[in-house]
Length: 91
Image 1 (tube, rainbow, N blue to C red):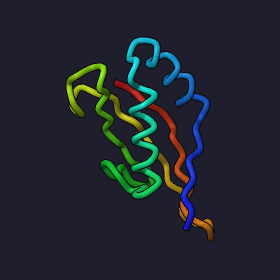
Image 2 (image 1 turned 120 degrees about the horizontal axis):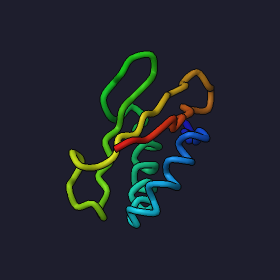
Image 3 (image 1 turned 30 degrees about the vertical axis):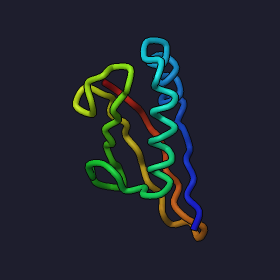
Image 4 (image 1 turned 120 degrees about the vertical axis):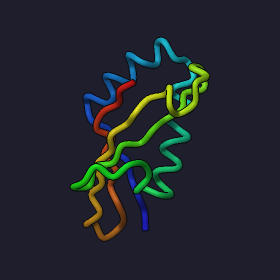
C-alpha cells in the first residue's frame, strides 16, 4: 500500500508566509509528512475524513500547544493506498 500527499493552494500559500518567520518550519513539515505517510489517521478526528494535526515548531520552542494546526483530508478509496490532502494550516 502506498500513501501519497497532495497540497492545496491555501496550504502552500500559508506555509510560505509562516516559513519566513519560523526557519525550522520546512524541516518540521517534512517530519510530519513522513509520520503521516506511515499513519494517515493522526490527530483529532473532525468527522467526514478531516483530521486536525498539531505540529510543534522547533524555532518557536513552545511544543505542540504553541505550534501550528494542520487540517488534513483523507481519501482512502484508492486501490494503491490513501491520499492525504493537506488543506490548510493555522497558529
